[in-house]
Length: 102
Image (cartoon, rainbow, N blue to C red; front, side, top):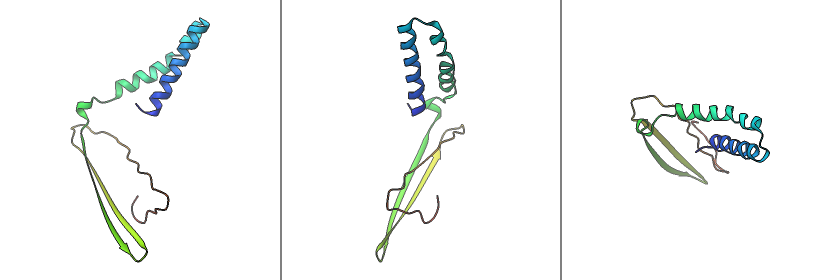
């Protein structure tokens, strides 16, 4: 479950509780767009059987005078038949600097 799903579910629960406490049907109708958004997300999610990745990561460290250089290579291979879009992000730690690549 990601952050978007948690936000939508918390909005739905708060609207449901508010509708039950106030006994107001208009507040319950306000849940409809959020339920639609959540339902479309569930329907568009590929099944787990169709998503297969293999990932490999190698690191090499070199030292030169007072500096240490670390080469990191990441390879991700989609082993499924369908095309899947993914986003990979790695945080650069304080004190580190990217010299080459992204």
